[in-house]
Length: 347
Image (cartoon, rainbow, N blue to C red; front, side):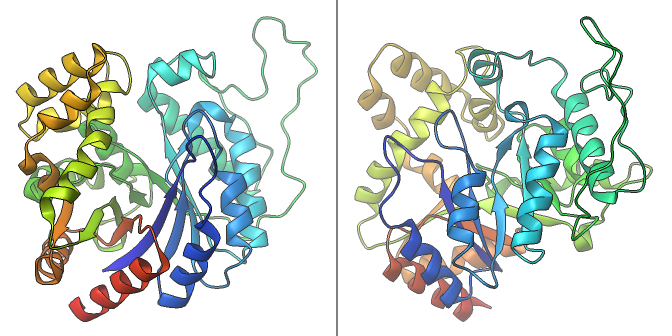
């Protein structure tokens, strides 16, 4: 089992201790550091800034939003950071949802699977640098020849020779079709709410992708980098209470009431009635009540909370379920070191 430091995206202000967490993670043997974006801080700037203080850890995004950049712009950023880091970059991508795509980026959300496939194909053309980059579309036509086109566009190759022609791409996928797509065309999967209890279901979806003609990877060389809230504590009730508002936000407040991909994850886990009640309370302004009605079992399904022995035991459970890297968000240098030591003991 490997560890990844998940810095996430900023709230109202940047976190004051991310630099020291990154240095501690590098020193403690973490495999990677990941950043994210929503509709505030972007993922690439903090990753490059803090990544400059590292020599060994891989630098990943979990995740970049497809609609934030054209595929060629994303490929340019990726090949730039890959050069600067000496070949340590991981591109983690996600489609986000219609609330963000249409409300923040002003783009259409249609056909997310087809858009993802086309997006990654273009990026890999850029990195291969074997010929000018072209795409028949329909989502990202290159060159553009649609309404308003001058007709002067021409296929281009990147000026910079990429350090690696095969920069790893991972998908932040939640639904069965998207998870299968990750297994077919990507190098890894970045689940946000993962539960080992459903490992057989996840594996069936992944196997569908691995079995497709031309699949890029097999189970043996495919990474599953799962977000995992790990809290080492003797006061589980207090930790549950701290985690539940986060779950209430994602379960009841992300996306629209009818289209919330995070909520669907919990419905697949068997918590449909909980999702309905949390959503109703959250959207009526009763956020504290929404968090309070979430059962402890819901937290336990996708987080590890307990004493050292319990945490050590559950890390082994996640590893046996197929997770290759746990993305954790320790709040202090001490927590970084403690988690690294615990994983080392479990190995």
